[in-house]
Image (cartoon, rainbow, N blue to C red; front, side):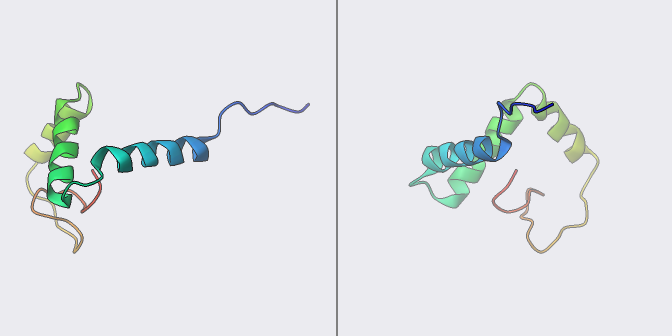
Length: 75
């Protein structure tokens, strides 16, 4: 029995990444990160989750983390 594949997650990921690149193109990195963080905070699911994680206090930081506790360039 052969299954037909209607969804390709690699293609979806590439499309989403391109959309994000276009959305933040021309912005300074700091401004893009601030807007991305604000979008997460405004999200009804991710916002409370991030607030809860941050309320637990500072975690050990890796070399690639900034002062917000976020990995540089990623939420």
